[in-house]
Length: 208
Image (cartoon, rainbow, N blue to C red; front, top):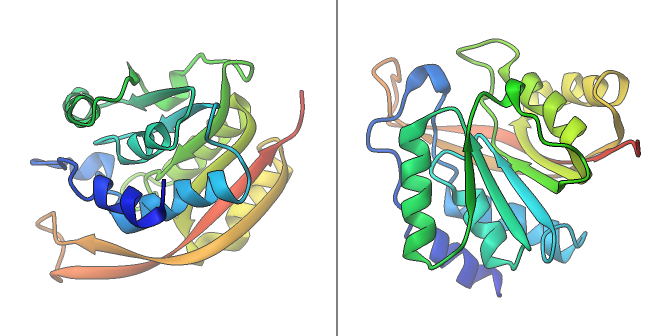
C-alpha cells in the first residue's frame, strides 16, 4: 500500500467526541500515523506478518494502520472503554479484524513471545508526570522486535538515557522529528492549535 493511500484511509477514521483531559487523549493525525507505520514496515520490516500491539490505542489509528499494512494480528490496548468502542467501529468500517484489551498499561500481562512490535503515541506526561515513561518501560518488556513511540523532542536526552539504562533497550534511535498539531480540545487550551515538536523513536529491546 502506498503512503498516500494509507494516509487517506486513516483520515476517514472517527475520532474522540468527548476526549478526557486526565488521559491526555489527543488524536494521532493521519499524517503522523501513516508515516510512523509506513516507516516501521518499509525501512525495518516490523509490521507485515508481525503481531503488533497499539498501546493506549485511543480511537485505534496506529493499530488500523498496522492492519492495513498486513500485520498478522493487531491488539489495541486502552484503559478507556469509550475509546475502545470507537476503535472497534473504525476497524469494522474498514473490514479489519483486530483484538482489543481494556486495562491499564502497567497491569498488562502479555509476554514478549506474543508481541513482535509495539506502536504508541503515549501520554506526554503533561497531566500525569512520568506517564510517557511508564508506557515505554512496559513496551520494552513486551515487544520482542521493536517499539515505535512518539515523545516530545524536548525530552530527547531523558528518553534515550531511560531507555538504555533502565528499560531494557539495546538501542534507541530517533528516526525523524515531526510537527504534532494539538487541536484546542480542552478548556485549559488558550490557543486554537499548538505545534509541538515530537520525535519518532525506534527502540530495540535486549533479547531475553
